[in-house]
Image 1 (cartoon, helix red, strand yellow):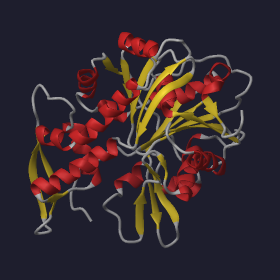
Image 2 (spheres, rainbow, N blue to C red; image 1 turned 90 degrees about the horizontal axis):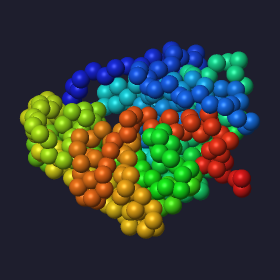
Image 3 (cartoon, rainbow, N blue to C red; image 1 turned 90 degrees about the vertical axis):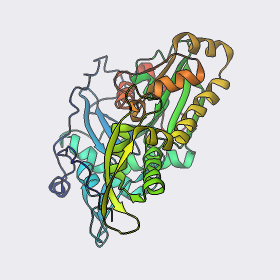
Image 4 (cartoon, one colour; image 1 turned 30 degrees about the vertical axis):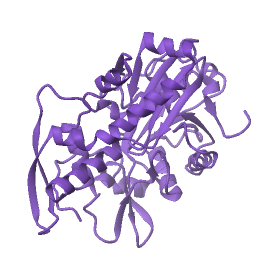
Length: 380
């Protein structure tokens, strides 16, 4: 068990054990999130239908007509003796690296896809119960999925949603949802390029006329950046750090481009030789070098997608630029790095963490206009 002591995190109310036992909990409203644009109800979706950004790192829930109502880590704490969840979300994440032998804190998704179906279904059911009022009928549900998943993986997502209480489940590809959430004109003949850097995957796509024309999905994201930081402290400092500490280092010191003022910070963990607690000073240059290979994989995905894009649409991308979304968009200097490597103007969207959820929610609000971006796994 790691002996590091990272700074305390803000704890939401959704993941409490009492809430799980009762089957209800308070909602973790996202402060500062933009209110959804109200549009025609359409003739298909009714009631309180739900869109879910089911991410490797975080799950964000959008309720039709209300906007984003919940954002929680995609983590479940399981009592291995009873095989029952004892905490979900923020509370479960706080247990990572600190749990006794009978409690296991797990992430049911790996690299953007479901790794543990049963735990994923329990997590999804809990989040739905946290935002759904009992008088509502069973909701229709839209779930975001990576563009590169297999038919089997897509079916697993749809089944998890249905087992969790959805009346009907649909999927939307993450780059399409991110582009919609970023305000790109996805139904225009103009080519728009989106780069969605998530916890488990990076999705790159060029979109035109409501469809994905060229795309690359790589199972590289924020989690691999965290792992690279952990590997660096082991190799360079003989120091083992926990996952939450590695994530904190990424957030505070990680960069893809040289900083105006380089940083230093004290990192605490366990000495690999003595086994005792120890602290070391780590620089932002060290961190940048450690994550360079992962960042390069993201850049390569962007270049590969551009290379596969028809010339007319590639010219549009040159004219209108590249938009970045997802948690990885917050890595310092990532836009400058992509722009430098590709020669294409690059910007981070206004709400990168929420773009996928906002876009999937917009597919509910404007179903008649956006129905073609959804799939139910059947011949629609």
